[in-house]
Image (tube, rainbow, N blue to C red; front, side, top):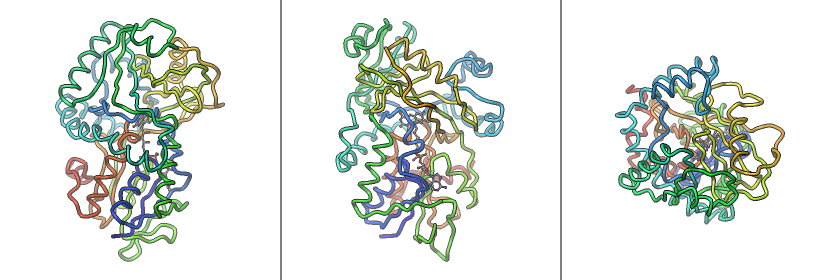
Length: 405
Ligand SMILES: Cc1cc2nc3c(=O)[nH]c(=O)nc-3n(C[C@H](O)[C@H](O)[C@H](O)COP(=O)(O)OP(=O)(O)OC[C@H]3O[C@@H](n4cnc5c(N)ncnc54)[C@H](O)[C@@H]3O)c2cc1C
């Protein structure tokens, strides 16, 4: 048993703390705010089992031209946003080519397929069942071509990864989602995924569970992390090990300890809208680059990626998403005066860092989960906790791979 500091109380940090505690370690979380109020609060709430391939950059000439010209809503950018991370974006693009993407998917798929079974015992022990729905989510296909593409994905994911899903006609979709107003060509019901009606509350419930089991959450700045002899210290709390789980803020800390991380920061936005008859499932309208999730606060419209350090007050992707949602449903006024925004912490090779920080005894990295950190927190937490307790870890996730280039 060891004393461990876990830096950061997002989904990744809190589930790391729980997994370490389960193995008998004495764990303290260091969080500067409140657990689950940053990226792990603002996502679309999907706990995915079907996202067996990490999100690749669209590389077809037409798609690239659209992005370059600022058209379309999948990826937006500002000159400063692109320039500040051009190296990382370039590597991400190279890793989106078919052979590299297939390699990453082999590891990624194994992680994703464990997601609901890793969340299940935590949801139960945390008493969070009331905010978890186990009914999957719906991906809309607005044209016959998109429906055909959807059909191929369903077959491939079933054959290669055992993913459960059902292809729906427009009429079948209307039958299970009667609040949809327009005719849609068809949809995929990814039926074995879960979704959460309040992602921030789920992280808070996991953090409360950690505290009930004897863990401590200290309010402090992880930027203070330093060595005192063999120990790691933050704000007078000392421990043998420290785990960096600060999501998009992690590279600022690793850099101080000799590890420069080129991360791709994909900004997303969300806003809730009042709605009398919300859909029963989250609706992914990828043609319009949004996910519409029924949440406790209203219908959450969550956007795709924007490469920009500075958030916009009136983001075009959200304005477009609002129009798409209005076309589909009767939605009311926005709940909040301003949209929420946060950044997905994406690694250029699309795999999270889970393991030892090179050349720093007992310093561990656990971040970079990109588009699926809310889903994957408890999965990679088990891998990290195992390795910290003397196990093997996963080769493909080791931070040392970045040094190998
Ligand atoms: C619009 C959008 C939609 C998404 N949808 C989904 C989805 O449907 N499903 C899914 O699986 N994923 C989704 N994601 C991705 C997912 O939200 C992230 O991958 C995940 O939340 C990352 O979790 P984390 O714990 O690493 O980071 P965070 O949740 O950001 O946690 C980091 C914590 O570190 C703390 N911290 C930072 N700096 C310091 C410091 N100096 N001192 C102390 N504490 C500090 C922060 O306060 C924060 O609590 C989405 C993301 C976005 C933006």
